[in-house]
Image 1 (cartoon, rainbow, N blue to C red):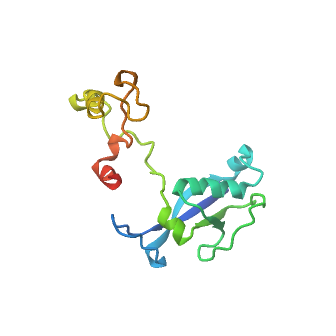
Image 2: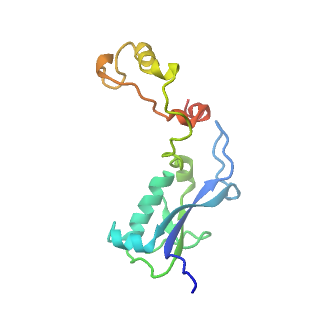
Image 3: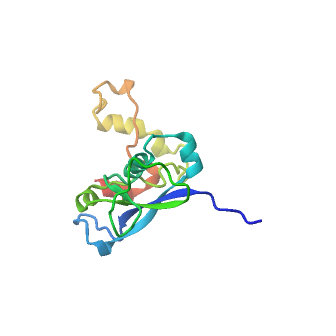
Amino acid sequence: MTATAPLEIQVYASFPRTVALGADLNVDPSNWHWVHCLTLPLKTLSALQFSQRPYKWIRYAIGAIIGSKGDISSCCDSPDVVDYNAVLPDESAVLYYHTSNEERRRMFPLDPDIGWTTTSSSGATTRRAQFRDDVAERDGMTCVLTSLPEGLCDAAHLLAHSKGDMVCFSYS
């Protein structure tokens, strides 16, 4: 008896092959390739009934993942838009999320390892123990968001410490 593969929808989005810090994004088609970003089991998608228009929901989900607006097509080399009012297929499908050059310049994908917190120790170090006090002193003993006294506030990293210096360099 052979096991059958689960029925699913795979969604691909186009990402640049190379990106240079401080340079304009190369939107030439030769610099872009399709990356598998999302797999949706049809059984689960049907059971959860996220939307009466599942293709619109899929477009929303992949747009949130890659951080840009676009349209879904069943073809990688043709942006012929799917019927957003159609029901889910009865068989597995592959979809492609097409974006304009303007949206490609704006895209801001989610970090695929955003929930991966095991890249560094959570144990307190001398530096971490002083973090709150150092931030309070740096910010004039006042919360930079609320202007409340530092005793009523807490300090937090806006970017996960475990992401390393290169992430911080990219944002500064």
